[in-house]
Image 1 (tube, rainbow, N blue to C red):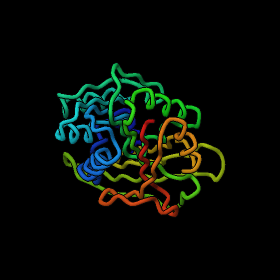
Image 2: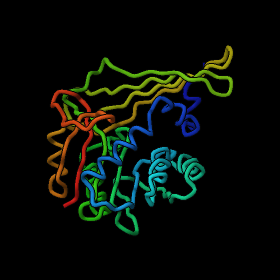
Image 3: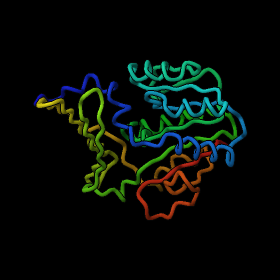
Image 4: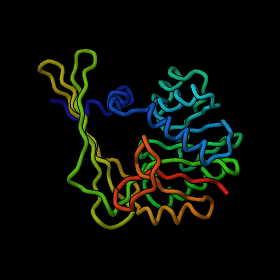
Length: 247
């Protein structure tokens, strides 16, 4: 077994890691949200866009689309997937764009990659600056008060003669504004096993605290984390969809 064998090439395995994600359902839901809450514009930005699967769907909806991410290999894959879109290597906490847009998304809990409260504030400010009046910022988040450290998600898939096992879970120590996303990947090819694991630092915040940060620039609606129906957050579940309309 070799440790950390996948670390430098993680972008190659990103789509395999996310193979169970229904990008179509997520994109359809946010499109509905934008139609209900938004300004009817069609300029779109996905921050922390990864390899661009959501952007692909928004291009199909007729949006003028662009994406930013910190990982250039992922952006290279996104450009192959979505040649009509534009992509730039930028930090979501400090990004700038040439013209304001009508919809900004941050899927897959990536808002937490801001790492801590101050960078998160900077991210919110950058989003507000990049949106037109009446534009929508939509993202999903987890409430630090409701994290169960014993829970994780796991799946496996096969690719090019190898089996890939993925596991991830949130871990919050119960105080402070940081948590970790714990990730492990195992690649099995015949008798050979390669293993990689990491703990990504993530911002930890309650939904009440997050709403307070957003409200100076946005009207905030919190919905249940359900991409099939739009329902108000029940104040019990630990994850939710945030819909933020710029004033």
